[in-house]
Length: 80
Image 1 (cartoon, rainbow, N blue to C red):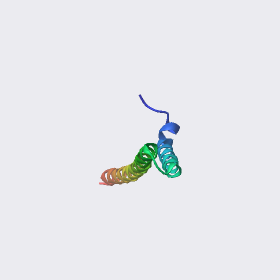
Image 2: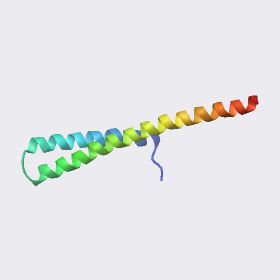
Image 3: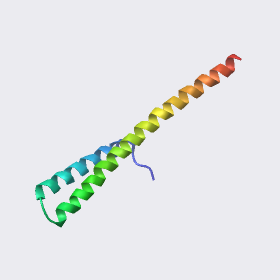
Image 4: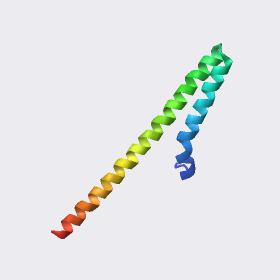
């Protein structure tokens, strides 16, 4: 099953936003089990969102370089 493109593209931002909200809730609660759990979940959400966003960015940059290099190699072969 594939997600719609706008939903797929917005997932890292949603994860980062949810993680930030949970970290803020943890900060406001000060003490207790709920505070610790929200801090852990917020940290995981924030780091996960950043990791997904960075991996997608790196893949797209590498993929674009690969295809531009491949096209130039093919055009060089045609000239020979």
